[in-house]
Amino acid sequence: MPHFLNTCDAGFETAFTALLGMKREDSPDVDAAVAAIIADVRARGDAAVIELTAKFDKLDLTPATLAFSPEEIATEIAKVTAEDRAALELAADRIRAYHSRQMPEDARWEDAHGASLGWRWTPVSAAGLYVPGGLASYPSSVLMNAIPAKVAGVEQLVIACPTPGGVVNPLVLLAAQLAGVDKVYRIGGAQAVAALAYGTQTIQPVDKITGPGNAFVAAAKRRVFGKVGIDMIAGPSEILVIADGDNDPDWIALDLLSQAEHDESAQAILVTPDAAFARAVTEAVEKRLETLERRAIAGASWRDFGAVIVTRDLAEAAALSNRVAPEHLELCVADPEALSTQITHAGAIFLGAWTPEAIGDYVGGPNHVLPTARSARFSSGLSVMDFVKRTTLARMTPAAIAAIGPAAERLAQSESLEAHGLSVRARLERLNRS
Image (cartoon, rainbow, N blue to C red; front, side, top):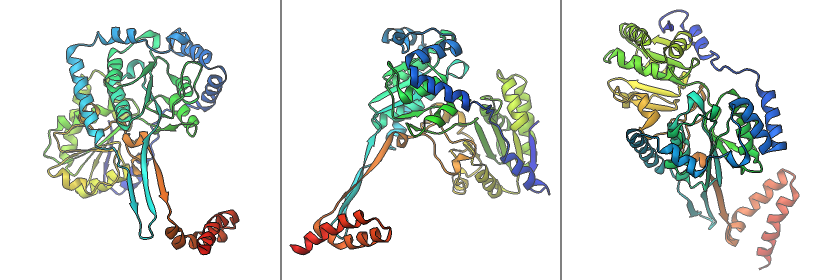
């Protein structure tokens, strides 16, 4: 059974604080092992990657087979059914259309002193996308990572996707093709992150690495950050549903389970002002867990980290949600638009009972790579903005530097940076002589 809380109870604040502080990540001390793997890849390149792939993925590779060949990709893609292809193409089209609207615009203007100021946006040159393999091989994640990069204008886009035992997911390769990926490497783990960051004899280094992974991948991304950019360190999935009593309890139960089935450490929370509805949803969850294919995983998640919170009203529900800052937030209420104005911290908001979070995972359009573990308080989901950078532009005229230069000189003197001040003074003196 999940954790049951009621805001009217005397011990609610203590219990809610404990809920917020729950440690859900299974994070063994992997940093030392990851540091050794990165050092090995930096020192031996292809040889280290090949050796580690044989050790962890039971797959023997050579420098020539680190990446899938065009012929191999075509063979695997041919196995995809027409129905699966159509679904993936629909998802790709919608994701591309949504992210195309995110492209920022360059700007240039002249201020009151005649100085020309502005900025220019340019894409990173190369990006590497990590795609988990095995049971957690999701073609939707390929689309969500690769399409924003291509929309941003990234020239070189590669994927690292392990294939344990040589098992390949044809949909992943099709997704890569639809998204415009240039090369797919069949490697994974910390060794793949190191290869993407530092390069090997065969693998070219990239400028940014995105995509989810296990504890070793997360630790590797932390270690290579600075050498390359990263998107975020993703934790277990989470969903919070704010619902009133005018919902189908089974719908809400399924929405909660849609995230619980990801991982035993995932978290699903229901917040409602209706105690009877809370009980009905709980009963519906238990009934669905009797037959759900991934019931062992979902059941453990619901038992250990699930929560049902009864509030005084929807305003209080929104306030609690902001403290949780959930990855996914469903507003299944009569006026979701109005309630959404009270939400300040959430990775993604799904408005109304007809908008299940699962739509967002596949074909909604917005990105499903979202901040977890309360990081929505200060960060956003993956977007085109993760693959571009802003360069500022400034051009002074003689009149402009005459107007603002003395202030710059004064500030340089106050910071005891003589050359700074002199570089401005030299130009001011030239103006004074003319």
